[in-house]
Length: 272
Ligand SMILES: *Cc1c(COP(=O)(O)O)cnc(C)c1O
Image (cartoon, rainbow, N blue to C red):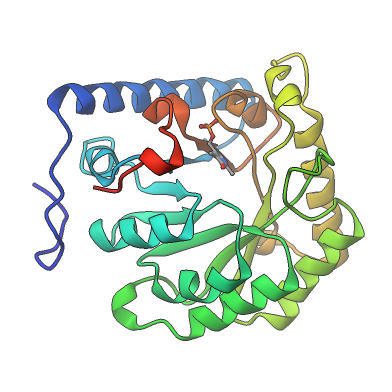
């Protein structure tokens, strides 16, 4: 049985061998998440976003239409996300986690089917454009009343990383979203962090980027008076450091390579 609707192009499932690999990889990640959650004494495991950028739609369908029923998928490129969202079932919850271009924000929010969250918001302008795009959505595109957004924070201070500087800038952007963007729901803060720190992350060695994001989260919650359900989530932890992120209390991890394997170069990636 498949959850594809009749008006969608038929996506062929991947080979049996590929499906087996994907399901085994997902099961391994899930079990590592469970162990880390127990070790950290967290009440619930974090949300797992399977990062499917540059991987074919058939891989995504194999994980979604399996007994594991993976629901959250993350993509980095607006055009690729748009194309995949049109091919795949509305029951998938899409996360845009890649760098945002202002000129694509409106279409991203307006046209992506079942868009669940945009995690890489780093300016007032982009937040406003997402807010505007969400107001122009047609009902058949799916999605809730509000679009969840995360503010991306550059916790490592590297020039190559996008995101807002931790500190007053993050507070100001969060305040702008809460007060000026009625169709957005400020869901949390996201960081990628430095690769060197990620590699050095062990249960004994806390990751400084994750510490920084936690501190900034505390500050924003306090300065904006966010309480209860409105308190901000943390989105941190990828293939090389997701267990460390769980031990530091993350609400969401974003795992790509460990589930899907190495990615092809961008010019060789195909959606179908
Ligand atoms: C690609 C990417 C990931 C996943 O990275 P892996 O190391 O493959 O797990 C997570 N978050 C962001 C923002 C990414 O761009």
